[in-house]
Each structure stands twice: as structure tokens, then as C-alpha cells.
Length: 453
Image (cartoon, rainbow, N blue to C red; front, side, top):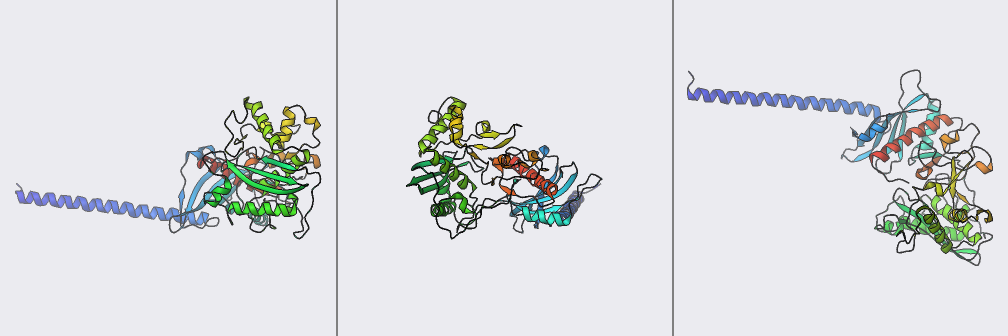
């Protein structure tokens, strides 16, 4: 029979053995887990470092992936300080002829610009093959571009930066105004106001107000650091661009390129397309004598036709007198459709009001503004073998050469952030890679709950 001292020693030894055994088990677990983690990270590095060289990768777990069966996995890459560097999306998309293309797409974590592209071969007879040469040319087109992407011509305006000021014909003196009919992803609606004196543009203002009435205008937000873009603050870039227009008078002489930027205005790195298109609408309004007051009545007419109340009654007028309303949910009122019921452009407010009043036939010129938001492009024509409903482009002659809206990868053209021209002789290849990039955009839009227009 054990004595009390022996029993105490036995219990102590049992506890020590239990603790030691538990320590061995736990230590083995952590060693095993650490080895498994290292093996996974080694595998990730081997797979993803060609598109995003990160210190560590973490697989994204999200219910949003259930809506995107073409995506095999999404990963976040971190640097040595555990700061996110970007996303890697592993996916398989369908080519125009129904074959499968495996892709790795990496995106900057903050800007979602494309930082890397790589082919990820799929097995089977239905694999789509892109040559190394074509892939390199596609990468040159797409890397650095913001998603989503559509096709457009790379035609540029040709200007002489040292040319004298031109005088536009037919301008009537007065104040003229135009605004976007939908807000952008930051909930801003761009607007331009010009004043014509003695037949010349004497004043011009480009800014944007927020559909969230608690927010500042874009210029003020940029000066206070709440709205940030690359290069100079947005307010300064807007001022520089307005000054350049006063010097040259013609927005066509600002040399807007296919990505919406210009190289001839010092200090301007932002997308100038909203400015150019709204100035062109203001110029058309001036030629028609359609003043700012007329424009505001036109917006009221649109709202009354939709909601039987004007902007004031709907409380859509802010303190500066702007109509703070996005028509994004009513695209039929401003969209131009062809005979096949495919959207081919946007109407101006002057044209819309004339149609609502039954006086459209009296318009000398019905302007059609091509769709955009830091994202449209000069009107283009495409080869006859292009599938326009897939590309967002219309084939044909001068009357049909506008960008199509709501037609590329089920994304409206108002969301397009970048425009590229397909690689020569590799249209289908470029189109398929763009589809992969736009699929990444659609996932991130769902995953991050973006508000995009």
C-alpha cells in the first residue's frame, strides 16, 4: 500500500509526464504547421512571383468567389513588413472561339492597376494558346492600366504646341454649362462652365460635386488631401488645363491621347476626357445659344419626365445651384441606340430636352457624347470581322463609328477606366486577356463593395 509521500510523488511524476507529453505534441504541431506553412509559401512563390514578387501570400476567402466560377483563387501579397502589395488572381477564361485560357493577373493593392500578367497553361485539347511574342505585346498594352478595360483606337489629335490661338466659329456670348449625367466611382459628377465674351472663351471652370452632399467639391477635397491623384493635386491640374484651353480655345488642340491623358499641358497627369467632352458640349451649347439657365431647365425637364418633379422639389439642388443627381439608374433617357437596340452613345441635355418637348427636328446638330468617366475615347471604326457587341466597338463607316455602351464583359462603358487598341493581328488574343482582367475587376467590385459608375 502506497504511503502518502509515495502517492504524492506518483501524482507529481504523472503531471510532469502529462505536461511533457503535451509540450511535445503542441511543439510537434507547431513545427508541423510551420513546415506546412513554409511549403505552401514556397509553392505560392513558385507560382506567383512572376507577376507579383511578395514576401508572403494569403489566400482570400470570400463568398463573392461563389459568383465567379472562372476564378480558381485570389491571393494578397504582402511585403516584409506585412503591408499588402497587391492581388494575384488565378483564373481561366473563355476565348472568342470557346477555348480555355489560364491566366495569372496581378493588381496593385491601392489603385488596382495591372502590375503583372502571365499565362497559366490549362490541360486538355480545349486549351487556348497565345504565343510568347503576342503575349509580350499584349503585356505592353495592358500593364500599368487601370481596370476595367475596353478597346478603342489609338488615334490622337495632332497639334502644334507653339501654334497661335485659334478662334472657334459661331460662339454666342454668355455663360454655358454641361455636367455628366452619372457619377464616377468616387461619387463625383464632373461639370464644366465657360463664359464666352466677344466670341471667345474668356473663362472656364472644371470641377466636380459629390452626390454625397456632406462631401466637398473635388477641387476643395484635393487641396485638403481628401482626394489624391498622382502628380500635382487635382485642383492645380484642373487650373492648368483650364488655362491651357484659354490659350488655345479649341479642346481638340489639347492632344488628348487614347488613355485620356495629354503630354502637352505642363503638370497635368490626370484623365482629361471628362473635361474635353464637357467643354465640347458647352461649345455646342454656345453655338446654339443654349445658356446655363436653359441647361438647368433641361435637367428639370428630364427629372419631371421621370419623377414628375423638378430638381428643387426633389431636393437635388445644392448650395451652389448644381443639380446633384445621377441618372445612372435611368440610362434610357440619355442613351442613343442603333436599329439593333444596341447602345452607341450618349445624348446631350439640349438634345434630350428637345426630344421631350417634341422639337428635336429643329436642332441644327444633335450632339452625341461618347460614354466616359475617366474612361472613354475618341470615336473609332473597327475592322469588319470585329464582334462589336463583344468589344464595345461599332464596325462600319463614319455614321456608325462610336463606342458602344453596356457591351463589353457585361460592364457599362461608363465604368471603363482604360482604353487600348488590340495588338495587330492578335485581336482574339488581346480580347481574351482583357476578359481575364475585367473578370478580376468584377470580382473586386463585389468583394470590396465598390460603388462604380
